[in-house]
Amino acid sequence: MLQLKKPLAFIDIEATGTNVSTDRIVEIAIIKHLPDGNRTVKRKIINPQMPIPKNISEIHGITDEMVKDAPTFKQTAQEIKQFLDGCDLSFYNAYRLDMPILVEEFIRADVDFDMKNRKVVDVQKIFHQMEQRTLSAAYRFYCNKELDGAHGAEVDATATAEILSAQVDRYPQLGNSIDSIIKAVGDDTIIDFARRFAYNDKGEEVFNFGKHKGRTIADVLKAEPQYYDWMMKGEFPMNTKQKLTEIYTRIMLKKK
Image (tube, rainbow, N blue to C red; front, top):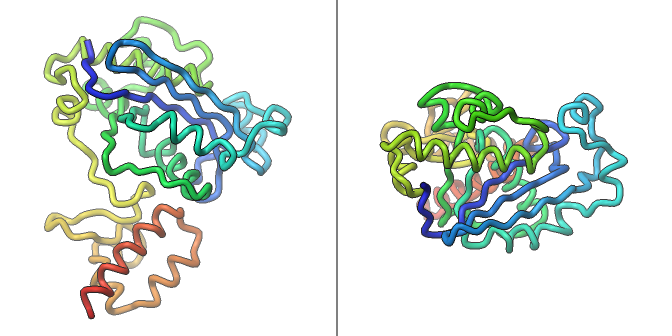
């Protein structure tokens, strides 16, 4: 059984699409497991302030009509932040969409959501290292159940919680704490959630896309300071721009 030192929040998000820069959250469900074994649930339908494409509505079942009277993310951001205070986080396929778009929405809402002291458990990462399947197959494999209502945020978040519990029971090498799980499967070292930046084998920050891929950010910005302006004006996620500004500021301070 999973032993928790602090609350663990299982999160699933449905959105208008998969572009972190331009798409918006339409539903968020959080299943918060407490160290004493109790759990609390928060589910919100969110008005994305943009149309939901018909093909996306067909996947998660949320329509423009359903969200027209719902609060915007900005209106509910503080409530969600407070619910997640003191929590580690768990997702299924954390870095594809759910975690990056959640951080992006907090930035747009001008709410400081600190990730520095949180551990993140990606249940899909455990699954792919051990078995390599999809969420529905993972639920069938680990829990011997069919995932009815897949792509509903609360259904998927609940399934994710059940899968992690079953994984802990099945794989003794994971241990039964968040620290032991992360030690067993590895911890993704993230600079920005869109992964436009990465670390090289020397631990230096490098570009992870485009013509400068593999070059250190410091070298590029020293040689081409206009590249910073190009990225800041471009259609990059706000989280990416924040991290670029932090790096740029550090480089400029070193030059003084």
